[in-house]
Figure 1: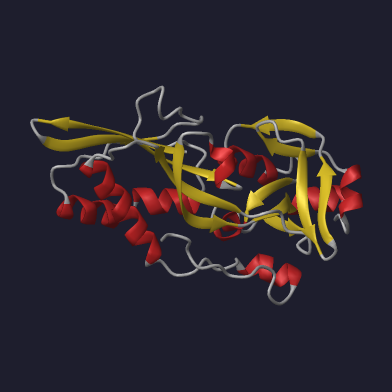
Figure 2: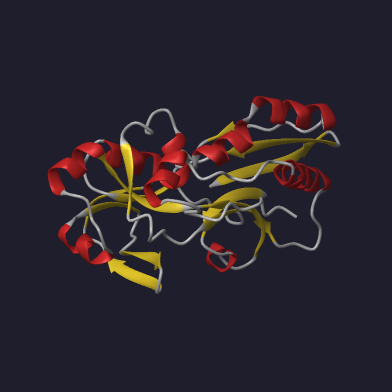
Length: 247
């Protein structure tokens, strides 16, 4: 997740921002793009943003942070006392390395996954696959667990075991020649990037300025495109392309 800690200085606004290392590529690009931050600086020269990465979930209230970005399946899973603004949808698909599939074979159905161990993020114990006949819950046997999606992607690419990855990784130059989508007729449930901040009676102007700026920028971005390798693996229309959710 991303978090921002803002405070005032001689009546002016300045702030710091922490970005966790496990952020998805599109989220990193969205929030660390030099042109974007330069534009914000030109509009609000009194506000200083200090960006860092955190490979953990920050407690916004207890740790004194004012703003964060988190990836979750729904806003209800983000915790009580937080206001969540949906920004961007993220699609996931099962993936394996070419080398692994040569050794172990290609799963043709969810039942085939019973013959494969996996790598996973955190304490995930199952995958919910969306099949032609509805959701299918598949228990997983994780041989390795990671706190970051980047670490998981590297493990899958190295041939450790299959894992659930954002489709964005299939366009990443580091992974696109190695990763292969698996069971693309059974995509995983989508998640969403949320802008979150603590519910309060008064939102400081400096915080409101940054929130409005990010939402405005995201609303102008083009729709997310399904990577060609995922589209080719499944055939026509593997995932419906979504418009950004910012509003």
